[in-house]
Amino acid sequence: AYLRDGECVLAWATNALKSGEARLDGASGRPKDAQVLAIEDAMRTFDALRRVTETLGADVSGRTASDVAPQFKRLQSVRDEVVCRQLQAEALLWAANEGLSSGAVGARFGGPAAWAGAVQRRRALATESGGNSNVSTFLDDLLAGVGEHKPAYPFKTVSEAARYIFVDGSASPTALIAKRCLFLYFLLDSGLPHDEAPMRYATRARFNPRLFQETRAAVLLDDSANEASLNEACSLLPQIAHPLLPVKFIGHLAKCGRTAAALTVARARAPNAAHLGAQDIETISLDVSIRLACGLVAEGFLAVRDAFKALPDLYKSSSGKLLITLLVDHGVENLCLDAILSLPFYGDMENVLLNLLWERR
Image (cartoon, rainbow, N blue to C red):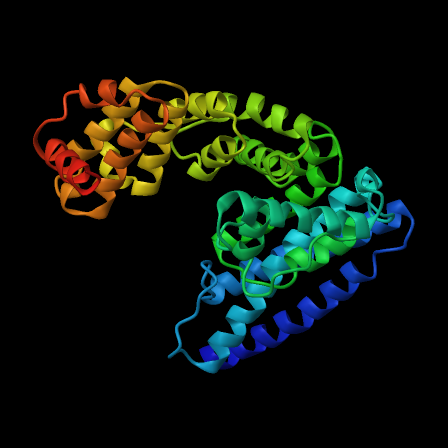
């Protein structure tokens, strides 16, 4: 009886989902008041469906074990589609209230084709500055985070963006966050002032203020070929820096030659030395490189010393050699090798230094 009742509820949920999708998809092109009513009606249906499917056992993480019964897989599929449609409806309701449901966006680029060209130039610049094809823009990181079905960016309208971003892809918690961030990225990249319509969308979507500012910084840094965008990013990032800020922001500032801003952000982001072991070597070497680029040799040396203390086996690896090499190369390039060698290299650091100098004799 339990299974039979569950099948009946699942069948109802499937039909109700199709009905809600039809109302949501049919809302476009209507007058504003009718459009808002249709979207709100669909949202009430989706909210009820989400609560029902999760009560029946659908996993809120968006994952289903491979050995469960077929009806539970269907249940999970319905729940995941409902969650994605909820996000789409949320975005469409905001767009209807803002008067942005129809009409092209991205006028600052001169049209969708020019906007797409600008995106390709940003990708080419990121690859060129990074020195390899694995370097990506912040946009590509968000596109990779939404699931296996990556939408083609940019979009012609806000409604199109809401459909292609939210409807397909994963429904895992991390993917849902990435989808919201991608939609916000699109709004900011289109040229809408960050403190107007995009801010109101972030409020409706219950964005963490820190995440909103990080997404804004990502848009600015992807557009770093524009001097005004780069200057705004350099002003914004020191204000929002925190220990969990992705190190990619600092690296991008450094690659753009804004080492002073990168140093300010790195200092604000730097965790306690006791937690240094949690960082990867790329992060540590970036911290050292930024300090050396700013002429802060002593700080760069201390960062290397702290790494050797926190990671006892560092001297055995190529990573330890890399950190010492950064110091030596800085001394050679800036004709201050004597000053570098006069620093207190002791213990494992001294052994790595001597081996490096012997190799370069």
